[in-house]
Image (cartoon, rainbow, N blue to C red; front, side):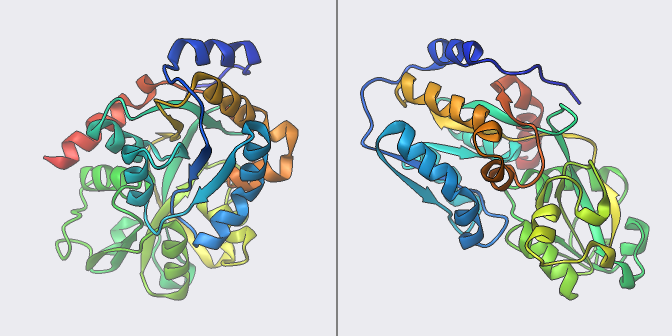
Length: 302
């Protein structure tokens, strides 16, 4: 996976002048938060970002945490959300609907300097499932249909490995839990035999890796990783971008990109919550990084 060079404020200023075409002023700023854990936890993790944004921009700033991914995507397409951290598949969906609606500006950078992560299949250790060969006639849970790691990538790579994703063909059933947290809790509680979620693949399994949905679940006390076992892992996936509404004023884009890039140094605890675990921070990213995911969504739609 690619490494990213350290960000400079000069680079952010170049981004703002080269890519921003918005004009005028804003009266409020609206941040969308994708699903994956319960709404209150999402709001709590991002409240510090809301407060910093409000102080920086001098306008009322609101957080929106819809029940599913599509709520954020439609908000971006409709102009009712100004900024959101999307998954790569979510960004692809927005771009395929309206290429001019948003622009990717930042991407999360892992502690190793890369910006990749993995879709991870897991089961309870006492379910006696060690790999997909032992998932025949079992119930497999996925998160949200618009999730990159929670559905898009597994729906391509698992059939390519010889396991049909048609319910009843190989797996006993395919279920959508609604989000990563719901999948993790559901598998842990025995509602599903196995599920998929996301992780950076760095650090220790016992900790839920360094960052990702498993780490968030561990930090929240929802699971003990010693009760779970990994049964599958995807190829590296490009981390999804922080996007901003294209028509935002240029100065707003520069200020928010600078804030996101500076977050770990300004407030490490806030950055930990926003980044969903240990990470270096955010760095600039462009549309080209997601062309492969866009093609994958096109194939899925056929």
